[in-house]
Image: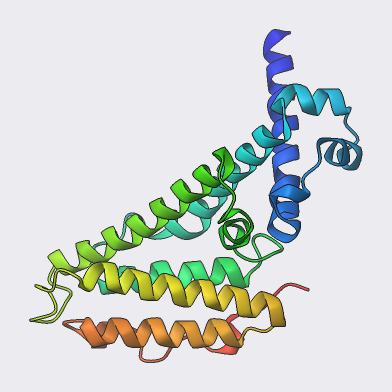
Length: 225
């Protein structure tokens, strides 16, 4: 009986977080309300409160749940691939598909909540900073693995700043693509970002011919209605 109650609690928690991730990607984490969520899901407010304790805890749990979704959509598909610039490209391509496919209805969850909390000190901002820093470090790691595997052309491979600079540029292109695509409900920013990232990788690659000849086209992105 105890196990049954625990499982029901876990199911309720998953249902709540599924809903809060979608809401937060559009309305922000401050748009979350224990009472509203309970009403929408046909749950008691006291039951939802018992699972999370406070609005801040609900916000933190939502951020952490979104990390799991992001990893499944963007990181895990390339995790076992051999190091190289091709892996870097596919990682970015998965990110563009994650944003363009509206895995979260508001586009990239972390772009949305970062803009919301970037100047608000506190535990929620700290958690978002940790997540964003982790993503940057992962992109840098994949790039550095490509460099160490001989994926960068001579001269570039010994530049100490090339990896953090490339990571910064690629993440900036992806973030801007997300912002413009969501604002204008248009896939063109994803195409432009893909072209920019691919051109940048070809410029440093030892074997640029291993990368796609052309970036994704508008036909490769379909924003759900």
